[in-house]
Image 1 (cartoon, rainbow, N blue to C red):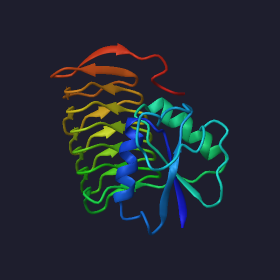
Image 2: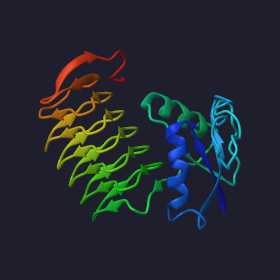
Image 3: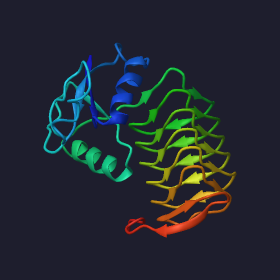
Image 4: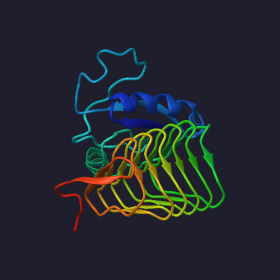
Length: 218
């Protein structure tokens, strides 16, 4: 049986510890071994029964280890995953038993589906996508690699989120809309039209706020 190591011992990491232990894979494919975090005091204030095993930087994965990345910021998530993968580390999905999957769903490497996440018919999630509590990805939607959906997000039918998109809590993206690479959809936004790469939108209907430096990669 493999040892599961969680990248990130912050708030989301501690949540993922619970979701991992409740998943069907726990006890059959792996057991949670602990955390990696570059902050050596990340768990000091918390009664956590698995250890902080060290920092992410320079960690060398062992053959009996697998990993999941529990970070809420897309840029940190990508950096840390690429460090571990660069040393040969393998990542696994964490799917809570209350998550609902429709027919024909495709899930990428390292996906996290939190409690009551819903991914419906023929939707596709890329690598290292997180769908947080009570969020929905509807039929034929595509969520690109590294993207992060916070709680109570509604990604409706035929929506496309390109890579590295962040969607804030209680946001809704209406059918057929495309959100460009590196864009940020603010909490509570209602997105009714396409969002260009690297743009932050807020409000209902959502409007651009600021263009983020480096939002689009070559």
